Structure formats: structure tokens, C-alpha cells
Image (cartoon, rainbow, N blue to C red; front, side, top):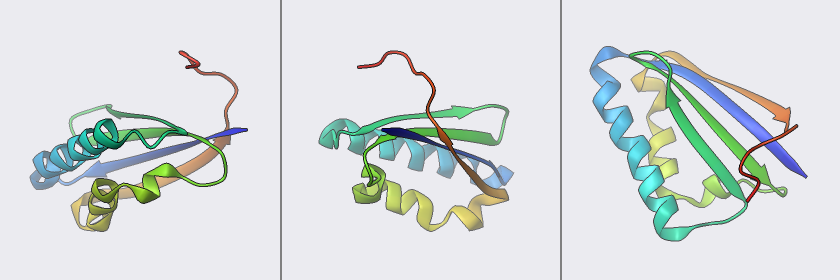
Length: 98
């Protein structure tokens, strides 16, 4: 069964470029390693607010094994004006289904 995790946060103005760089590094590592069991998206919904959506297959989160993701989450509290607000949910549908 799939589960979805949605995380929303707002970065400080001076942290915007660093946050974007760290997010891009996560995607670069995912592309290089293709851990499987994961569909992952990041959107910037206004100038400094980000939403990450992870659809995870199985019990473990493949992002936990991604070094760039660990580096991204390490300093998130210092980069944020409004800290991460994670929400979990049951996946009802997604496209493409792979």
C-alpha cells in the first residue's frame, strides 16, 4: 500500500537560494541512485513557501537513505521562518501510476 507525506514550510528570505540548492541536490542524488519505492515532488507555491510531496511504497522511506536529503533536513529549522508542517495521508490516486 502507498502512503503520502506532504510537508509545507516557509524559508527566511536569506535562506531561499540555499534551500533551492539543497532541494536540487536531493533530486540529483535521486536521479543518480534511483532508490525505488518513491515518487517525490517539490513545489514553490510562493516566493518562499515550499511544499514537498512524497508517495512511498512499502514500510520504509527511501529518502532516509539519501545523503543529500539528510543534508537538506539537517539545517531546515535554521532556514525556516515557518517550520516544516508534515501531514500523512492515504493515497487515493496518482498519475502517472508508473
